[in-house]
Length: 465
Image (cartoon, rainbow, N blue to C red):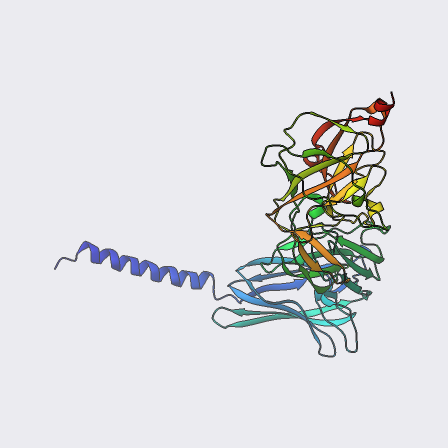
């Protein structure tokens, strides 16, 4: 009877596999799960003096396993360096400086969460425990002595945030938040936000006369990045983490909550009028009922018509009359922008400035300004970027009412200056408009808008001559 070739091959392969299995069993019998485990030093002194500060732990595994390395003191208390961590078959080496998973001692009050900490001085039985994928277990043990390792923790004392809700939009109200923490010992200090998506946003320490990581109080001033022209993190509630690590490797952290609301880069500009001019100028006779000061509230000038100005470069006007302007402010950003009076329609005397109206400069407030080349101060005449009936209002925690031009909206602004001072050497003079973000900037594109030559004529001098 003939035996087929295929059958012969199958039998040969089976015989070969059997021979290989027998050979492997003879040459390499079942190996223990843990093939080796030991420390290079049996005594360490983790005091950062460079002598016996660390010891090397070497171990090997023959199969996949979950390992734990723990230390048990003479009283039976256990401390973990590694706890149920997966490893593949290999030989491993790791440095041990006495720093283990965080713990607190009985009756110990620590400000913050201890993540890593020096093991207390003493004699320990160390145990390397391994659990294989099939459930098999193995263990190696030995003795390790720790001396001169006691070191105070890098605690975070008096960690505070104020305010805990802030609006980084440069409106001058809760634009920043301050974070303070005290280090009782020198340590590497980091502070960062963690958002709902897990993203970490690190906050640099503010220079305040203390070196980075030095013992003492440390200060963080956070504006959401808006002062650098960066969009702040999205609105929401964030976890603030302050973490300190000393030279020994001990780590302590504290957490707090911070809410960002109404954040965004404010963007606005003077937009062209429907007739094509950036700023419409007109001349009107002065009427005493418009006079306004701290002690007297005059009438507001009605919104001027736009047909009178066809854009000629030069305007000639009698001395003592009013130079009237009209323009449009557009908020093309993503956040409302705050403004403050005096309101559109207010008439200034030439020698008055905005403070003469009882309204003073407010950080973060946007106002329209008129500047002339004969002015001795910058932007002496200023107006709100809208009227109370066209703006959003918001009651602040301080009891004040604040006014905002909403994102995506525009507002018409007008007013007048009564020109009463003629300087022959600067006649004609130029006058122009600007958009002022007080205590922030007058952007280049909004700093000299609609400039016009203004020639003053002293009609009384002409008639007397």
